[in-house]
Image 1 (tube, one colour):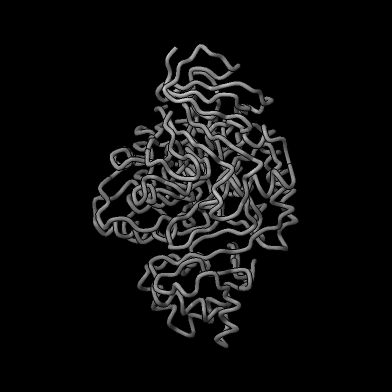
Image 2 (spheres, rainbow, N blue to C red):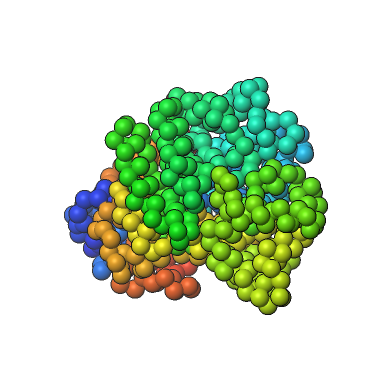
Amino acid sequence: MRVSTTIDNVTIIDGTGNGRFKGMVAIQDDSIVHAGPQTTRFTALRTIDGKGKILVPGFIDMHGHSDLQLLRDPGMAPKISQGIVTEVIGNCGMGAYPLGEIRSKRRLLGEMASDILGDYADTWPWKDFETFADTLEHHGSGTNVVGLQAHTPLRIAAMQGNPNRLATSQEIDGMRRLLKQSYEQGAAGFSSGLYYAPCLFASREELLALLHLTAEYDRLFAVHHRCEGDGVVDSLREVLELARQTGVRIEVSHLKAIGRRNQQFVPQMLALIDDYAAKGVRVTFDQYPYTYGSTSLYSLLPPEYLQLERDVLLSKLARPEERVRMRSLMLAPDGWDSLASLCGWEDISVMHVDGLPELKGRSFASLAQESGRDPFDVFFDMLTRGPAIAVMSDVTQSDGMLERILMHPLGYFGTDSLYSGAVYHPRSTQATRHLFATYFKEKQPMPLEQLVKRMTSAPAQCLRLEDRGVVRCGYKADLALLDLETLTDEVDDNRGISLVMSNGKVVWEQGRMTGVVAGRVLRSRSG
């Protein structure tokens, strides 16, 4: 039988969690036509020697933010070089569609999205999920893309004026209509970021209305829940209870507890997840393998200031009396996560602020000490400049509790990757390498077969991707060839992931991109 490609003499971990076996894989066009014993019955246009290496399904990133990066850089080398061939976008309630007809609404979404998604063209040439997907397919997409419908653009499109408030019943109905349209067009679920404006202003009525519709379509509810700090257990219970009441499938985003004093809550969080799963709630979570995170600098501000339009916020940041009030609220938060309080300024650093490249990597504590100012004033002064993109990194959790979450069977792999600034968190470029090199090779928290499963077939099943995530005849040829002996977490060391294949095409080989862009938009079927 003539085929496009064979990978011979290779150890196969098929993604199901079953034991590894030696054999070969044959690929015709975009699909696997043989995955089993080595045989001579195939004649291939190209034969790849897999001796000494491990072949696995291409990895699925359950939590990314490449919505606009896919358009800025269609090849998606930061993901492909990690062996990631499929990414879920639209997370944390932040996305690029739908767009309201009014130009001011489009501008507002661009402003709100910039810290997380970065910038694109002034004119976004799409209006909804379908036309966004068409735009991606026209430009080419390095990764396969699964799109969630994010909460923020729903609120902006359906609400009159400032979306940082409670929605009326009529506006909630408008959101439901837009969400239904996205599901009919193939969106895989609904995401909200209850920690971020404007989602944090959503009422229970609004959330229930959107989640009942999501359950009707059997789509996924991905949520950055309200509080990952002192109130993390109650916050987690809130979203699990929403899932129980509506019957929706829930994916808790980047599960963690923030702050040294809150690491004690991780066992209670995992027990709570187990309890709701035992009650019949279909609950999973994703996790990135780093003890420090990255997000918008603006998110450090109290919620009452986040609801202000940007020009009003900047005027308040310039007033000494308002700074005193902000400082007080950030030191003693009530019902919200203040990272300044939870982490401390010594553990919060600048990743990128427009116009201030020299501050990259500097902690606010060191900047304050150097300038002889209070770190709060350093922070306020930075935002008073009105940067469109201002991104930080923050040490949020302990290694021990990260590993405990990693070992839980309901968890999936995610990167929480951001490409909004000039400097990236390592999770945006190194997450899979870090996971294998730092956690699997050094600590071996689980068998390799189980680790691969949570990065491949398990998330594929959650996303209803029926022909991906497994090395099996009839499945799409999304594959990664690993050499774990040489794989490290060293930046610019591309050894260890020797080949990546997407939809039957080789997109990464011998430490470099091949120039082939082979990803697709993977639409969900209407329910």
